[in-house]
Length: 248
Image (cartoon, rainbow, N blue to C red; front, side):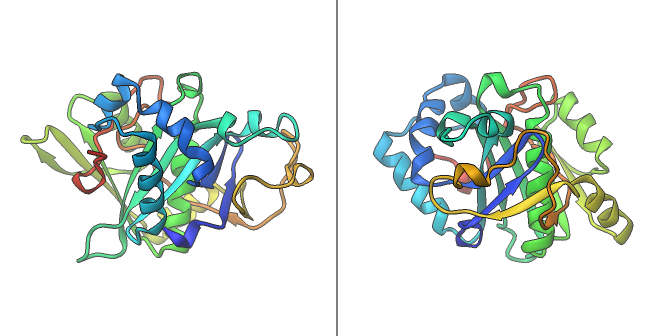
């Protein structure tokens, strides 16, 4: 999505940056994993196909993608490349033509060392904030495998309610509708998030905030959690993408 190609979001644990060609080699390495191929219902792609996919995602008007960076690692020293700090990705799918205010949230924490540390939770919160404040979304959905109890409990804790069950796909659909009280609650959850302009590569080192420093820039807020990807909830959860996103 071109709308977010010059946008970066800074949180406490993660930094979200647009998916660029710089990130493709690491992403390609991740997707060689049989585990991730199984969890994402994906087929392995060549490196050239991966670059083509990245370009497609950038142009798609119904798909908003950010790469998730480990904030502490990224801030540790000037000159650190984004590729070396990559933890996963987070997506919003705007595929319901009948309801442009509805978005489906998905997040994948692909780097094993980054799981179980709250990265997926904050990444999803930040992405939902972006969807609510920049894309005009007022409803969010997450589709979860029926046996995925940790993720179901997590969504319920975050005010999502079950709206459908599919015995064919063995998944549960949960939804969050942003009433005014919910929206105000969401604003509080990501009041720390700072938006900065982004250019391919990374910001100049001098612009990087020191770890733990206060941020005073414009803020975003919102709510969400990975629908199904290897997550930060203490367990790696299955993450089948919607049919239009499958990589095969």
